[in-house]
Image (tube, rainbow, N blue to C red; front, top):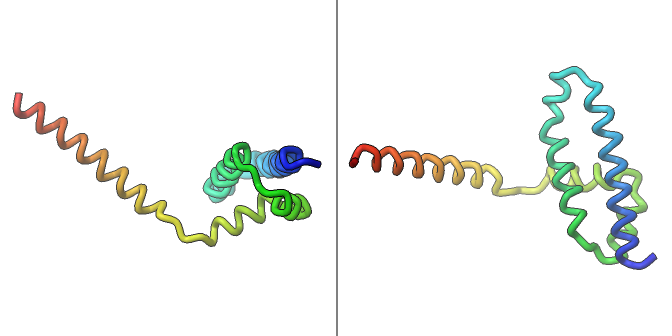
Length: 109
């Protein structure tokens, strides 16, 4: 297989894994679904990233050999330090600044 075929095969394997996970998840009680919401969304983001990502042959092969490559990537991702909460705080502040500015402009008129 060439590089494109390897990456396509990996994406397809991960997609099947996510489809199976989703099928299981939607059969769960609502509380269970909610407890897995973050995991589901991150797994979807990983899949979306895989559509654009081109891993080198050795890396694609290594993941293809895994029983659950999507689950493996999710587990590694969940251990990473991210600036997600800083981004959320920044979005809150930006929204608040815009709303306050609009409010001030209304009061001036």
